[in-house]
Length: 555
Ligand code: GDP
Image (cartoon, rainbow, N blue to C red; front, side, top):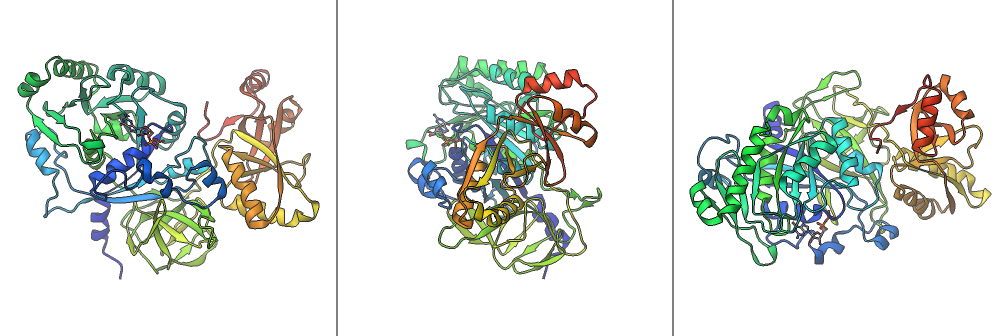
């Protein structure tokens, strides 16, 4: 029997669901592992994502994936985290707070859902869709490199969706920029004001500890062999810190004062509104600052909240079960080609085996095969609550953006397509395979693998595929061949950006050089441009034309 709203409310309060956004190599895998280590899911770093174990955690769902040594599957890692004393920052001494991070029998641990974004250099719509399933993001930055292109792209999506962001400056054990340089870069380039919770003691490359800006105390770290264990922390008051660290301590305190003068102290409201970002300095490799990150997530990041449906009515977390599918993954396992749909629970309690309704078709959907998936590991999920991510096996009818519910009916707004930047035509190599080709195209499109564009001039035999990242094309051609035995030919098109337009503008746009208008399957009219100069030219010459940026444009 399903639990009471009070039980659901309690489960919701202790949950945090977030994703890490970063550029490849900033240390996302290392940080994921460090978080798991701190949550005591693993006893030694190296077990989940460590260099040695890394390859084996990569799923083998596609030859292509194997060849590249990457994982295309987005999954979620759930772990418990002991409650901390940070909730009341000014109160209590630093050592009391440190003690309170130890597991306490009387308090329930927090439940952290880390939704994994695909960790490869290429980009796809899946990466973006993951961000529709989280309540907060950790923007992980390499201290030496600062903001990098993919971090920026993902950050734009967070901003668009109003997701609060915690900034983590990683690799502080290596030479890099100064804290103030990094803070300025973030404020100037993306208009997000960092509000460091801690200031590092010791410059980048000489990471000794953290000055806790709110308590005024010093957290001194010690290295462990190979960074395999949780780094021991020593809590010292200002006087003791000054005695040990000398100038490094004074510099940290001065930096903190400067930040306060500039108004860069944490403000919960501004953070939740996406205007400021609590900042933490870490070394994921040495496990420095990882506990502080977990604390910040638990204490500052929002718990799952209700979600507005297509009519704007909010489905509250304590209402009966509802969930949104945010990703569909096909053919992950070559031995039995299954199809997994990942849903994020929005409201109520999920119990495996319950029969829910698929809002898009009105059909019943049995949830017998519910799994948690991380890397190669799958385990059965029996119960889940708002904020949790559950994989549904062989969910052939489900597509990204779909709603599942238990009465009363609810339908959430579609996820939306993201601004494509790569375009190519696709055709079957042999004419006899056309029917198969059409069928496969429809299937892949409904799964959200690529967007499909058509116009009268080009006809239907070679539709235009539009993608956020070119790897989506590879997935299409590989699956066309392996699942539908259709050999295809892909030809890149010379367009690089798309704008949404309307009927009254399309005729004029079609007359322009370097511009072509298409209808996307969802009915949207898209004008493709060869480059941004062409777009600027057309916008200048014809200011009356409708040309709206799509969600998450990179520029
Ligand atoms: P990802 O691509 O973002 O998942 O990055 P990885 O976690 O694979 O890390 C990329 C490289 O940076 C690896 O060689 C890591 O060992 C290294 N690395 C990650 N975090 C740190 C850190 O805090 N300090 C140092 N020095 N190296 C790190």
